[in-house]
Image (cartoon, rainbow, N blue to C red; front, side):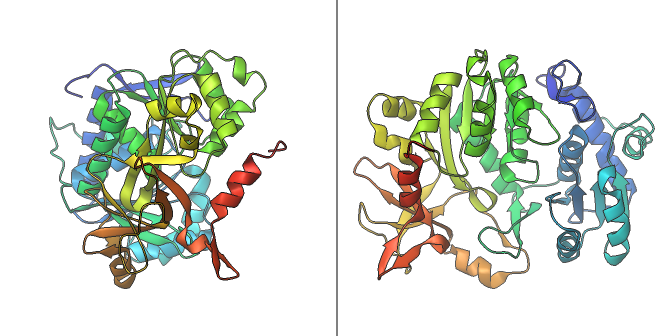
Length: 433
């Protein structure tokens, strides 16, 4: 807000439409003023350092403002997956002992039914900005503006509790410190070489670490963020071909959906500088099509995102080398990024030999603080400062890593280890895929 006060911070379609011509733009200065007032409103509502605030909402500018205000006050936010069942939402809110709940009006009935069952809850607010006198807007407007509000979240203070089921059916509450999230943002901006100006978009919802960190990255760099309520392939393709998006984060299924839209391969993507993808394997066929259509820098980032941020990266020059003949790199997850110590280990945490498959184990400043109320699981996952990701991989003679499978997904057949990704890679090359 000090460096680029009048530059756009957020751009969002009006209502829930994805029309590129009907948008709301909010500057860095305006955003900072609103967040400061919201932080004071939280103080007035009795929320104190360490209290927990839940959010049950699709993506919006107001959603992000709640998160930023939490960081200023020193509150811990719990961003909920809005696709969860009501009993799952209640379970998470109760386990988190939340003091406040911000929600969309589309979830009003759900909130009405569960509020009385959350004994710790003392404050709730609908964040939909349907009118100038909405509950959320009134909360901001009725609060006098102070010139400054120094952020109180720092170092090992828990900024967020992000729930993830991973490979289990029981959601785990990942304790994300300010130190962790800050370093994820710093490393991303360094690795992706993000510059001021332009427009950043992430297909991941804000309750995912890649979704909210995409916004944090843009904030740090002085780049605007495009905020859509949810991912919609047609809408995103429209924004991309309109020439406004300069960088984005997408998973392979999203990219496939966008490229399957009739006429998408004829779009004008001259403004698009980079795409970060990850989250699952991508076939060489899809990668080649992606490179031909978008003609921009590609980054493949692998990480235990919720627990450890990005750990490895395959860079644009690696993609160009793959297209130029080193085709094995299409299957690589790259090399460890700066600041990440990475080992491949057996079950006893011993390093495996080059070419052998081992579990990815990392040590960095982007590791979580642990799991909420699960000390045994925390002790199993973080051993002497090393995080066990559960991803299995091998390293070639040039130092490139190749993912084999999740440790829990490995198939044992006739006493031999069978890695699903090997089967998937063969299937993906079939002419019908």
